[in-house]
Image 1 (cartoon, rainbow, N blue to C red):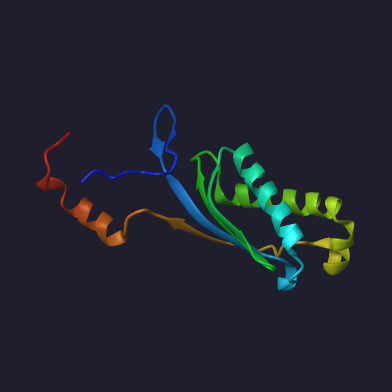
Image 2 (tube, rainbow, N blue to C red; image 1 turned 45 degrees about the vertical axis):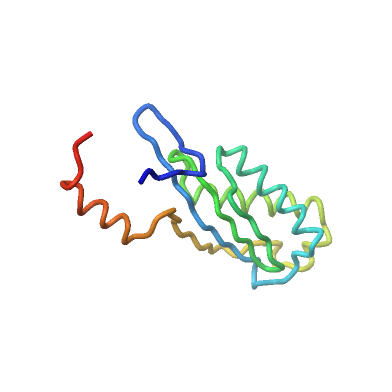
Amino acid sequence: AKLILMVKEYHTSSSVSVLIYHLVWVTKYRNQALTSEIREMLDQKIRKICAENSCQVEALTIMPNHVHLEVVMPPWISVTVLIKKLKGTTARWLFKQKPELRRSFYHHHLWSPAYFARTVGNCSEETIKHYVETQWERPFK
């Protein structure tokens, strides 16, 4: 059975990769300040930042106090770098667009410094383990 990828593969001179991450970050003190209008604005801005960094958004949901993003990333950008760009850029931009929002956040910090990141695969660990363990059962290519 051939694996069909629906996401972008990144090709360099020495590698081919598909790196998919589920990223989550929250507002400072889980402040529920992300109104529907702000969520729409953030959605567009996050998609723009991802595109500018060669990242492909697979899914994006913005809740009143946190963001969920599934993103395909190139191997030359780290999760930390992308998160810093997303959180830093959106915070500065949003405070500029909505100055009144600053009053809702202590020391004018929109996002909590923490984040969650998990790799996402399109097959289970069990499938990969079986594939690796049964290499000798298939012809060499």
